[in-house]
Length: 360
Image (cartoon, rainbow, N blue to C red; front, side):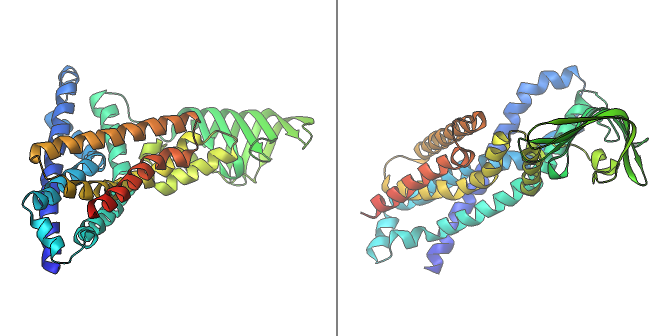
Protein backbone atom coordinates (compact mmCIF):
# COMPACT_ATOMS: atom_id res chain seq x y z
CA UNK A 1 0.00 0.00 0.00
CA UNK A 2 2.88 2.40 0.60
CA UNK A 3 3.94 1.93 -3.02
CA UNK A 4 0.39 2.59 -4.19
CA UNK A 5 0.08 5.64 -1.90
CA UNK A 6 3.29 7.12 -3.26
CA UNK A 7 2.22 6.41 -6.82
CA UNK A 8 -1.17 8.11 -6.39
CA UNK A 9 0.33 11.16 -4.67
CA UNK A 10 3.12 11.50 -7.22
CA UNK A 11 0.67 11.43 -10.14
CA UNK A 12 -1.71 13.77 -8.34
CA UNK A 13 1.02 16.28 -7.44
CA UNK A 14 2.43 16.20 -10.96
CA UNK A 15 -0.90 17.14 -12.53
CA UNK A 16 -1.63 19.64 -9.74
CA UNK A 17 1.60 21.57 -10.32
CA UNK A 18 1.22 21.55 -14.10
CA UNK A 19 -2.36 22.74 -13.76
CA UNK A 20 -1.42 25.51 -11.33
CA UNK A 21 1.29 26.88 -13.60
CA UNK A 22 -1.01 26.69 -16.62
CA UNK A 23 -3.98 28.37 -14.91
CA UNK A 24 -1.82 31.11 -13.37
CA UNK A 25 -0.29 31.80 -16.77
CA UNK A 26 -3.72 31.93 -18.44
CA UNK A 27 -5.17 34.17 -15.71
CA UNK A 28 -2.31 36.66 -15.90
CA UNK A 29 -2.28 36.64 -19.72
CA UNK A 30 -6.02 37.34 -19.97
CA UNK A 31 -5.86 40.05 -17.31
CA UNK A 32 -2.81 41.63 -18.96
CA UNK A 33 -4.50 41.87 -22.35
CA UNK A 34 -7.56 43.45 -20.70
CA UNK A 35 -5.40 46.13 -19.01
CA UNK A 36 -2.71 46.60 -21.66
CA UNK A 37 -4.37 49.75 -23.05
CA UNK A 38 -4.43 51.31 -19.57
CA UNK A 39 -0.78 50.43 -19.00
CA UNK A 40 0.23 51.99 -22.34
CA UNK A 41 -1.82 55.16 -21.76
CA UNK A 42 -0.29 55.66 -18.32
CA UNK A 43 3.21 54.69 -19.54
CA UNK A 44 3.67 51.97 -16.97
CA UNK A 45 7.09 50.29 -17.03
CA UNK A 46 7.60 46.57 -17.51
CA UNK A 47 9.10 46.15 -14.06
CA UNK A 48 6.06 47.77 -12.48
CA UNK A 49 3.73 45.43 -14.40
CA UNK A 50 5.87 42.46 -13.35
CA UNK A 51 5.66 43.46 -9.66
CA UNK A 52 1.92 44.10 -9.94
CA UNK A 53 1.25 40.54 -11.10
CA UNK A 54 3.89 39.04 -8.83
CA UNK A 55 1.98 40.30 -5.78
CA UNK A 56 -1.26 38.89 -7.24
CA UNK A 57 0.09 35.33 -7.57
CA UNK A 58 -0.88 34.29 -3.99
CA UNK A 59 -4.46 35.52 -4.56
CA UNK A 60 -4.65 33.80 -7.95
CA UNK A 61 -3.28 30.60 -6.44
CA UNK A 62 -5.90 30.53 -3.69
CA UNK A 63 -8.58 31.12 -6.32
CA UNK A 64 -7.60 28.37 -8.76
CA UNK A 65 -6.22 25.61 -6.52
CA UNK A 66 -9.67 23.94 -6.19
CA UNK A 67 -9.94 23.75 -10.00
CA UNK A 68 -6.45 22.28 -10.28
CA UNK A 69 -7.14 19.81 -7.46
CA UNK A 70 -10.35 18.58 -9.08
CA UNK A 71 -8.65 18.24 -12.47
CA UNK A 72 -5.86 16.26 -10.81
CA UNK A 73 -8.45 13.93 -9.28
CA UNK A 74 -10.09 13.25 -12.63
CA UNK A 75 -6.75 12.66 -14.31
CA UNK A 76 -5.12 10.51 -11.60
CA UNK A 77 -8.09 8.35 -10.56
CA UNK A 78 -9.62 8.40 -14.03
CA UNK A 79 -6.48 6.94 -15.60
CA UNK A 80 -6.49 4.14 -13.01
CA UNK A 81 -10.13 3.41 -13.79
CA UNK A 82 -9.77 3.47 -17.61
CA UNK A 83 -6.72 1.16 -17.50
CA UNK A 84 -8.60 -1.23 -15.18
CA UNK A 85 -5.85 -0.75 -12.60
CA UNK A 86 -8.44 0.41 -10.10
CA UNK A 87 -10.46 -2.78 -10.64
CA UNK A 88 -7.34 -4.85 -10.01
CA UNK A 89 -6.68 -2.95 -6.77
CA UNK A 90 -10.24 -3.45 -5.56
CA UNK A 91 -10.36 -7.15 -6.45
CA UNK A 92 -7.14 -7.69 -4.50
CA UNK A 93 -9.05 -6.83 -1.34
CA UNK A 94 -8.19 -3.14 -0.96
CA UNK A 95 -11.28 -0.98 -0.44
CA UNK A 96 -11.97 2.15 -2.46
CA UNK A 97 -11.83 4.25 0.71
CA UNK A 98 -8.35 2.97 1.52
CA UNK A 99 -7.21 3.47 -2.06
CA UNK A 100 -8.35 7.11 -2.11
CA UNK A 101 -7.29 7.85 1.47
CA UNK A 102 -3.93 9.47 0.49
CA UNK A 103 -5.80 11.94 -1.72
CA UNK A 104 -8.24 12.82 1.05
CA UNK A 105 -5.39 13.31 3.52
CA UNK A 106 -3.51 15.47 1.03
CA UNK A 107 -6.71 17.49 0.44
CA UNK A 108 -6.87 18.25 4.16
CA UNK A 109 -3.21 19.31 4.24
CA UNK A 110 -3.75 21.40 1.11
CA UNK A 111 -6.71 23.15 2.78
CA UNK A 112 -4.54 24.04 5.78
CA UNK A 113 -1.81 25.35 3.49
CA UNK A 114 -4.27 27.49 1.53
CA UNK A 115 -5.73 28.87 4.78
CA UNK A 116 -2.24 29.96 5.83
CA UNK A 117 -1.63 31.46 2.39
CA UNK A 118 -4.93 33.35 2.45
CA UNK A 119 -4.50 34.51 6.05
CA UNK A 120 -0.88 35.67 5.89
CA UNK A 121 0.44 36.04 2.33
CA UNK A 122 -2.63 37.16 0.36
CA UNK A 123 -3.44 40.23 2.56
CA UNK A 124 0.17 41.41 2.23
CA UNK A 125 0.08 40.93 -1.55
CA UNK A 126 -3.24 42.79 -1.83
CA UNK A 127 -1.80 45.76 0.09
CA UNK A 128 1.24 45.91 -2.19
CA UNK A 129 -0.94 45.59 -5.28
CA UNK A 130 -3.20 48.45 -4.13
CA UNK A 131 -0.19 50.67 -3.47
CA UNK A 132 1.32 49.98 -6.91
CA UNK A 133 -1.99 50.74 -8.61
CA UNK A 134 -2.44 53.98 -6.67
CA UNK A 135 1.10 55.38 -6.79
CA UNK A 136 2.86 53.89 -9.82
CA UNK A 137 -0.04 53.38 -12.24
CA UNK A 138 -2.68 55.99 -11.38
CA UNK A 139 0.05 58.51 -10.38
CA UNK A 140 -1.74 59.53 -7.20
CA UNK A 141 0.14 60.43 -4.03
CA UNK A 142 0.59 57.63 -1.50
CA UNK A 143 -1.76 57.61 1.44
CA UNK A 144 -0.34 59.53 4.39
CA UNK A 145 -1.25 57.80 7.67
CA UNK A 146 -0.29 60.96 9.57
CA UNK A 147 -2.70 63.21 7.68
CA UNK A 148 -6.25 62.05 7.00
CA UNK A 149 -9.40 63.84 5.90
CA UNK A 150 -12.93 62.66 6.74
CA UNK A 151 -11.39 60.49 9.42
CA UNK A 152 -13.36 57.64 11.05
CA UNK A 153 -12.07 55.33 13.74
CA UNK A 154 -13.66 52.45 15.63
CA UNK A 155 -12.19 52.47 19.11
CA UNK A 156 -12.27 50.17 22.11
CA UNK A 157 -15.43 49.53 24.15
CA UNK A 158 -17.74 50.69 21.41
CA UNK A 159 -16.26 54.18 20.94
CA UNK A 160 -16.53 55.86 17.55
CA UNK A 161 -14.41 58.89 16.64
CA UNK A 162 -15.06 60.99 13.55
CA UNK A 163 -13.17 64.07 12.47
CA UNK A 164 -12.93 66.35 9.47
CA UNK A 165 -9.14 66.15 9.74
CA UNK A 166 -6.50 64.16 11.63
CA UNK A 167 -3.06 65.76 11.82
CA UNK A 168 -0.56 63.28 13.22
CA UNK A 169 2.23 65.83 13.26
CA UNK A 170 0.30 68.18 15.52
CA UNK A 171 -1.44 65.28 17.27
CA UNK A 172 -4.88 66.79 16.93
CA UNK A 173 -8.33 66.16 15.50
CA UNK A 174 -10.28 68.98 13.85
CA UNK A 175 -14.10 69.19 13.81
CA UNK A 176 -14.32 66.06 15.90
CA UNK A 177 -17.35 64.06 17.03
CA UNK A 178 -17.00 61.38 19.69
CA UNK A 179 -19.58 58.67 20.44
CA UNK A 180 -19.59 56.32 23.41
CA UNK A 181 -22.18 53.52 23.52
CA UNK A 182 -23.70 51.74 26.48
CA UNK A 183 -24.42 48.71 24.28
CA UNK A 184 -24.90 48.06 20.57
CA UNK A 185 -27.97 50.31 20.30
CA UNK A 186 -27.85 52.67 23.28
CA UNK A 187 -25.82 55.89 23.13
CA UNK A 188 -24.26 56.97 26.42
CA UNK A 189 -22.25 60.07 25.45
CA UNK A 190 -21.66 62.34 22.47
CA UNK A 191 -19.07 65.11 22.25
CA UNK A 192 -18.92 67.66 19.40
CA UNK A 193 -15.84 69.88 19.50
CA UNK A 194 -13.86 72.23 17.29
CA UNK A 195 -10.66 70.40 18.13
CA UNK A 196 -9.20 67.57 20.22
CA UNK A 197 -5.53 67.85 21.19
CA UNK A 198 -3.29 65.09 22.53
CA UNK A 199 -1.25 65.96 25.63
CA UNK A 200 0.75 64.02 28.20
CA UNK A 201 -2.45 63.69 30.27
CA UNK A 202 -4.46 62.40 27.32
CA UNK A 203 -7.01 63.97 24.96
CA UNK A 204 -8.43 67.44 25.63
CA UNK A 205 -11.49 68.50 23.66
CA UNK A 206 -11.78 72.24 22.98
CA UNK A 207 -14.80 74.49 22.34
CA UNK A 208 -17.71 72.15 22.10
CA UNK A 209 -20.75 70.49 23.60
CA UNK A 210 -21.05 67.22 25.50
CA UNK A 211 -24.36 65.34 25.63
CA UNK A 212 -24.88 62.49 28.07
CA UNK A 213 -27.87 60.15 27.96
CA UNK A 214 -29.30 58.02 30.72
CA UNK A 215 -30.88 54.62 30.14
CA UNK A 216 -34.27 56.25 29.60
CA UNK A 217 -32.82 58.44 26.82
CA UNK A 218 -32.97 61.71 28.77
CA UNK A 219 -30.30 64.17 27.60
CA UNK A 220 -27.97 66.29 29.73
CA UNK A 221 -26.19 69.11 27.85
CA UNK A 222 -22.84 70.68 28.82
CA UNK A 223 -20.99 73.41 26.90
CA UNK A 224 -17.25 73.67 27.48
CA UNK A 225 -14.10 75.50 26.46
CA UNK A 226 -11.85 72.61 27.43
CA UNK A 227 -12.88 69.09 28.38
CA UNK A 228 -10.18 66.55 29.33
CA UNK A 229 -10.97 62.92 28.44
CA UNK A 230 -8.06 60.97 29.94
CA UNK A 231 -10.03 57.70 29.89
CA UNK A 232 -9.74 57.47 26.10
CA UNK A 233 -7.24 54.71 25.33
CA UNK A 234 -6.70 55.67 21.68
CA UNK A 235 -3.50 57.56 20.90
CA UNK A 236 -2.32 59.42 17.78
CA UNK A 237 -0.23 56.33 16.97
CA UNK A 238 -3.43 54.27 16.82
CA UNK A 239 -4.96 56.75 14.39
CA UNK A 240 -1.79 56.80 12.27
CA UNK A 241 -1.95 53.11 11.43
CA UNK A 242 -2.67 52.46 7.79
CA UNK A 243 -6.29 51.54 7.17
CA UNK A 244 -6.95 48.20 5.50
CA UNK A 245 -9.77 46.85 3.42
CA UNK A 246 -11.36 43.59 4.68
CA UNK A 247 -9.64 41.60 1.90
CA UNK A 248 -6.31 42.96 3.20
CA UNK A 249 -6.92 41.73 6.74
CA UNK A 250 -5.94 38.47 8.35
CA UNK A 251 -8.51 36.39 10.22
CA UNK A 252 -7.61 37.97 13.57
CA UNK A 253 -7.60 41.51 12.17
CA UNK A 254 -11.00 41.01 10.57
CA UNK A 255 -12.37 39.52 13.78
CA UNK A 256 -11.18 42.54 15.78
CA UNK A 257 -12.60 44.87 13.13
CA UNK A 258 -15.99 43.16 13.39
CA UNK A 259 -15.90 43.39 17.18
CA UNK A 260 -15.19 47.12 17.01
CA UNK A 261 -17.97 47.77 14.49
CA UNK A 262 -20.45 45.75 16.54
CA UNK A 263 -19.62 47.68 19.70
CA UNK A 264 -20.06 50.86 17.72
CA UNK A 265 -23.61 49.86 16.81
CA UNK A 266 -22.85 49.25 13.12
CA UNK A 267 -24.05 46.38 10.94
CA UNK A 268 -21.45 43.64 10.53
CA UNK A 269 -23.32 41.07 8.43
CA UNK A 270 -21.10 41.52 5.37
CA UNK A 271 -17.90 41.26 7.38
CA UNK A 272 -19.15 38.16 9.23
CA UNK A 273 -19.78 36.45 5.89
CA UNK A 274 -16.22 37.29 4.82
CA UNK A 275 -14.90 36.00 8.16
CA UNK A 276 -16.61 32.62 7.74
CA UNK A 277 -15.44 32.47 4.12
CA UNK A 278 -11.81 32.68 5.28
CA UNK A 279 -12.39 29.18 6.72
CA UNK A 280 -14.89 27.73 4.27
CA UNK A 281 -13.13 28.55 0.99
CA UNK A 282 -9.77 26.89 1.83
CA UNK A 283 -11.71 23.80 2.89
CA UNK A 284 -13.09 23.65 -0.66
CA UNK A 285 -9.85 21.92 -1.67
CA UNK A 286 -10.73 18.92 0.47
CA UNK A 287 -14.38 19.07 -0.63
CA UNK A 288 -13.60 18.95 -4.36
CA UNK A 289 -11.28 15.96 -3.85
CA UNK A 290 -13.95 14.21 -1.80
CA UNK A 291 -16.40 15.00 -4.60
CA UNK A 292 -14.16 14.34 -7.60
CA UNK A 293 -12.21 11.20 -6.64
CA UNK A 294 -15.18 8.79 -6.35
CA UNK A 295 -16.82 10.36 -9.40
CA UNK A 296 -13.67 9.81 -11.45
CA UNK A 297 -13.55 6.19 -10.22
CA UNK A 298 -16.98 5.55 -11.77
CA UNK A 299 -16.42 7.37 -15.08
CA UNK A 300 -14.50 5.00 -17.31
CA UNK A 301 -15.19 6.67 -20.64
CA UNK A 302 -13.74 9.89 -21.97
CA UNK A 303 -10.21 11.19 -21.97
CA UNK A 304 -8.29 14.09 -20.53
CA UNK A 305 -10.41 16.63 -22.41
CA UNK A 306 -13.60 15.22 -20.87
CA UNK A 307 -12.10 15.37 -17.38
CA UNK A 308 -10.91 18.94 -18.00
CA UNK A 309 -14.36 20.13 -19.15
CA UNK A 310 -16.12 18.34 -16.31
CA UNK A 311 -13.70 19.82 -13.75
CA UNK A 312 -14.27 23.35 -15.01
CA UNK A 313 -18.04 22.84 -15.09
CA UNK A 314 -18.16 21.58 -11.50
CA UNK A 315 -15.85 24.33 -10.21
CA UNK A 316 -17.73 27.10 -12.03
CA UNK A 317 -20.96 25.78 -10.54
CA UNK A 318 -19.36 25.74 -7.08
CA UNK A 319 -17.95 29.26 -7.55
CA UNK A 320 -21.30 30.57 -8.81
CA UNK A 321 -23.09 28.99 -5.85
CA UNK A 322 -20.53 30.46 -3.45
CA UNK A 323 -20.87 33.96 -4.90
CA UNK A 324 -24.67 33.75 -4.86
CA UNK A 325 -24.70 32.57 -1.24
CA UNK A 326 -22.23 35.33 -0.25
CA UNK A 327 -24.37 37.98 -1.95
CA UNK A 328 -27.44 36.74 -0.08
CA UNK A 329 -25.43 36.81 3.13
CA UNK A 330 -24.15 40.33 2.46
CA UNK A 331 -27.74 41.46 1.85
CA UNK A 332 -28.94 39.85 5.07
CA UNK A 333 -31.28 37.34 3.43
CA UNK A 334 -29.47 34.32 4.93
CA UNK A 335 -27.33 34.00 8.09
CA UNK A 336 -23.60 34.69 7.55
CA UNK A 337 -22.49 31.18 8.56
CA UNK A 338 -24.95 29.52 6.19
CA UNK A 339 -23.97 31.87 3.34
CA UNK A 340 -20.31 30.90 3.67
CA UNK A 341 -20.70 27.18 4.38
CA UNK A 342 -23.69 26.16 2.23
CA UNK A 343 -21.66 25.31 -0.93
CA UNK A 344 -19.29 23.15 1.13
CA UNK A 345 -22.17 21.40 2.86
CA UNK A 346 -23.88 20.70 -0.46
CA UNK A 347 -20.78 19.48 -2.29
CA UNK A 348 -19.51 17.63 0.76
CA UNK A 349 -22.81 15.78 1.07
CA UNK A 350 -22.70 14.95 -2.65
CA UNK A 351 -19.12 13.73 -2.22
CA UNK A 352 -20.10 11.36 0.59
CA UNK A 353 -22.96 10.02 -1.56
CA UNK A 354 -20.64 9.56 -4.55
CA UNK A 355 -18.15 7.71 -2.36
CA UNK A 356 -20.91 5.35 -1.23
CA UNK A 357 -22.16 4.98 -4.81
CA UNK A 358 -18.66 4.25 -6.19
CA UNK A 359 -18.16 1.43 -3.67
CA UNK A 360 -21.20 -0.46 -4.96
